[in-house]
Image 1: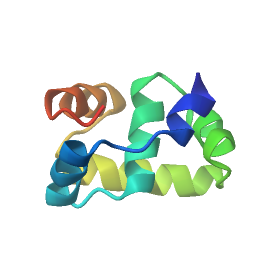
Image 2: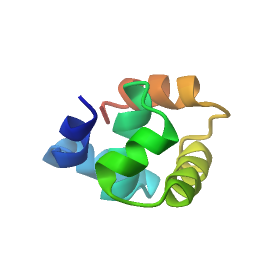
Image 3: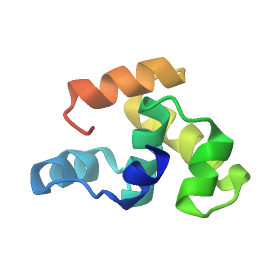
Image 4: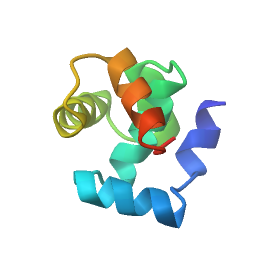
Length: 83
């Protein structure tokens, strides 16, 4: 499951929404893992990046989506059609 979100890329329409929000493809991949309930450690392993980097991406995602926690981020991403 975790490796699946690491390989997927957003569809063209989703890229436009993501670009409008300033979300990078890597942030979308992190957001996808977050929405699936993966921990930062699991996301880091799947994306082959450091756990600290995931934490930075999560913080950036929260700011760009104007949310305060992982649940709100996942809900907002679904609402926007990002995941």
